[in-house]
Amino acid sequence: MPPKKRSVAAPDSRERLLHAAIEAFATFGYDGTSLRDIAERAGVGFQLIGYHFGSKEDLWLAAVQDAYDYFATFTTSVRFDPAGDTAAQFRDFLRQLIERTNEHPHLLRIFVQEGLAGSVRYRKVLRPMLKKFYETLTMPMQREAVRLGAIRGLIAEESHFLLGCVVLANLVQPFHVEFFVGERAGSAAYLERQVELLSRLLTTTRDSVT
Image (cartoon, rainbow, N blue to C red; front, side, top):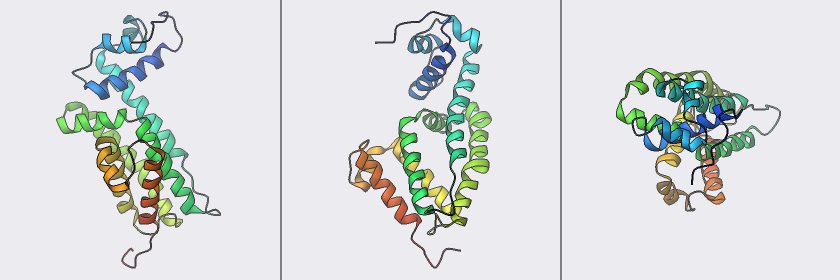
C-alpha cells in the first residue's frame, strides 16, 4: 500500500520525490515510469513534481545526480592511514562497498538498463558520469591503496576491474555469486565470504605484478 499523502507543503517533499523517482526508474525504466506513479510512491501531491523539478527528464536527471552524489561522497570519504594496517582498512572498504551497493542498487540498475538499450540518456549523461567517477574518484583511490600496500596482488587497473565485476555480479546475478561463495545471497555470511575471498586475491603478492 502506498504511503499516505502528506500536505503539499511538506518540507521533505523534494527528497521524497527523489527517492521515489530513483526507485521507480530503476524498477520500470524511464519509459515505464509515470510522474503520477512517482508522486504516489512519494506520498505527495502530483503538482509538486512540476514545482520542484519541472519535467520528467528533469526529475530523472536530478534523481540520478542525487544517487551519484551518494556514492561519490562515500568514495571520497575512503582514507588509508599508512601508519595502520592498510590491508585491514581495505577489507573494511570492500565490506562497505558491497553493503552499499546491495542497499542502494538503483543507480547501477539504471546504468545497466540504459547501457543495454544504448539510449541517448546513457550516451549523454550516464557514460560521462561514469567516466568522471572512475577517473576522479575510484582509480585514484585504487592507486593509493596499491602505493600504500593495501593491495599487493594486483595493479590498480586489475583491482578496479575485479571490483567492478563483483559489484555488477551482486547487482545483476546475486544467485550466481551464491554458487561461488557458498552462502545465501543477502546474508551476513554472504557478505563476509566475499570480503574474505577478495582480500585474499588482493593481498597475495605475485612476482609477475609490476
